[in-house]
Length: 463
Image (tube, rainbow, N blue to C red; front, top):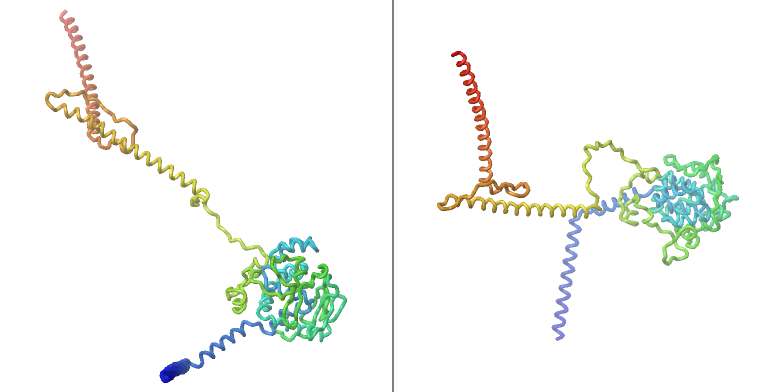
């Protein structure tokens, strides 16, 4: 038994070794057949595609320079809202139509809106919301950068703040506080219930601009504010209530934006489910409202959206949609409109009623034809008996088929029609003969009267 067991074990080992050797042989053959440049080319193409889809450093500086010196919470709200460009337009139009709403009345009205909390919070800053809606292409580009390169966006904001601070333009004032915290520069309002939005020229506030081919964007400039050089001024303040402004804030080290649920409930109604008191923000594709993403990776991350990005249309920018021009239509050539679906049961009942009426008429016509045939047969039988010896002939009389005139009138009664036409011809000929005889009778009478007159004349001659 031990000998048999050892033999079977050796056989299994040999089979396993054979399979391994065959597998290695096939792998070596595949490596020799496949060209070595194909995997390298594919990896290079993937890297090139990713590089072209990513925003360059100069583009990030260009789009973030106008907002990098705003308070932290306002920058966070702008970045979150920029990922929902269509809702930005809708909110800006709504705020413009409801300028009289402020304070608690505005918060209560915003609870009924289906927008993202970041969109609703910007309704307390109508000038900033108008700037985002007016320059929608810049807003969409900023949102795409924040979705695809979150770390680069937040790092660029910190770099711009340090440059403004090195130039002596960013410092603590009566309107804002500049706080240094673990290699991060924070900007907070002095009073959390009153917020001042800084106004500055991004081309000079950071020092001489280092990318001449990519000048910074210009966003918010309230009327009546004069900007000179790198000086930072402040527009009119916005009173937004106690602790409402601090419902979102940055985690500059982990590159997250945190949300405070209790403070956001003042203007937003969350679904009835369990939420933690604080959680970091995540993009919601539902509030994207069908707007396509910029690159393939972002599209696959948040939903299967088309890769190609279309330019913002008139509706996205808040303008009324274009109405296509229509030519005048000749009413005489207008086709007859079909009935509405609501009249379909009525049309069906009307059609059935007409069909039943036509069927009854056809049945009545067939029965009428049968009765006429029977009458014709009854009229022909006495005539046939008249030719038999000893049979008493019956008097001929005209029999007109009874009933109304129908398309089947006269079917099967051809002899009757022929004889009726012959009698009509004979009656017309007889009338002509009688008329001629009357003329002859009058002519004979006239000859007789003329003969009498001549006799009288002759008798007189005899005298």
